[in-house]
Image 1 (cartoon, rainbow over the protein chains, first blue to last red):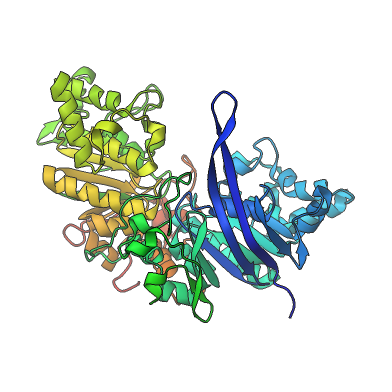
Image 2 (spheres, rainbow over the protein chains, first blue to last red):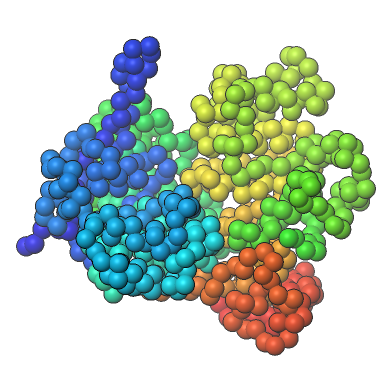
Length: 322
Length: 304
């Protein structure tokens, strides 16, 4: 069996917090805690969770834009950890990222053409004609007429800017794109256009996505598999059908129930009480127990691990599983 | 920017104002509050009636007695609306000063207000700074300030957009509770149709600075009349439907300000447009009593 396209093993990141005159490390903020996952070719893994759950940090750890405290990452069977910076740059060419707010992530003083060509310029050794050709191709793929090449980001609408962000990722011919909330800043009607585009790209090019969003409808539409994160850990992971139709973890159930339905009939929503606690003082035992409707005494001391409950469905909650 | 927007809210009623960014939702609310920055913007014409009195006839100084007292507002981003260098207490006291409370009374009322918006440990929280609170907490503080004077009308401009869904559900529930406790009229500005469906009685759909449809919530979702509303509902329904393979989209994008033609504002994106729509601006009709749409060729029933 060939190795998965992306394999992440027990990756963790804790940020030291310094305080006092001497700047001694007083606390650690555990942003991502022992996460393992795989993404197969031509597949989308959706990552959902509240802000502060570690979704974006995880994406950056995979790319080693942030150095992990522990853990390993393999891309196309080759390790991205424990290698030189130069070697990593070479290996992660097939691994690209799309960011949330294209107005923040695109240099305002560059034209669209320059922005899309940048990855090729960094790689060096391409002729001017080749770069022009590739830029036109990438823009066409994302549905932006090439006369936009000479315009600046502020001249485009939000949806068009996100298309530029996607074109920048595509120009390197990636196998996997890490999309960090790519549609959160967009209006509903534009959001649908971008989601359709991403689906088409997958069908045409066989590119895989690690798709981060907080909107569960968006996640469900895009994903083949879904991972739910809470306070730096995956609490539930499985096939899209299992996790959306048969959610087991009390956090997943509550998250699903919090989304306002389009049916104007008044519904008694089950509100998850409280808020996500500070990552510096993560509750003992199960991190979710202070907010959990089914928490028991044992949840305060026992840290749950992911357990198989069906084919491709794992849940980290012993209470919900029985 | 905003043209001939007309609506009314009864006591204890909730009106939703929905539309995409740039459609004029916020400008409408700022106009009501007379908070449009001068000299860049001005209100050319119109009336804001509160219990039968035209508020625009009042002087700017006189209007300050109304703003925050009779009509109050909660803004989208609690992170930027609170002063970072003052404690929550100081900012709450500022509001209460205007209401003529002093010393102990003020302190007492501040704690009452924080309790009312669901902030536990109120005496301690008064000493906290904005950065020590979570997004949801900050929004609760903003709501506490807004209801301090028992306003008759509360305008909430995207109050939950910056929050997580779990916190959004809590804040919406809080707003509804306060509304019935205080018998307030609530004007809820949002881009989220789900929020409208769950919270509002009536809806105003805005596009390009115009009201394109006005309806009771159940009518709007059952039988939208304007092609824009229908497209919006259809695109969201296709996202929530588990069998969808390709999402329904409204073609094109919202034109920039000043690029709207003389005809219907939705002309460039409409799939039902006819010649007449390009040259003539459709007025709000009065098709079915309270359900109105600004369209010559409204969508027929059962299209969704």
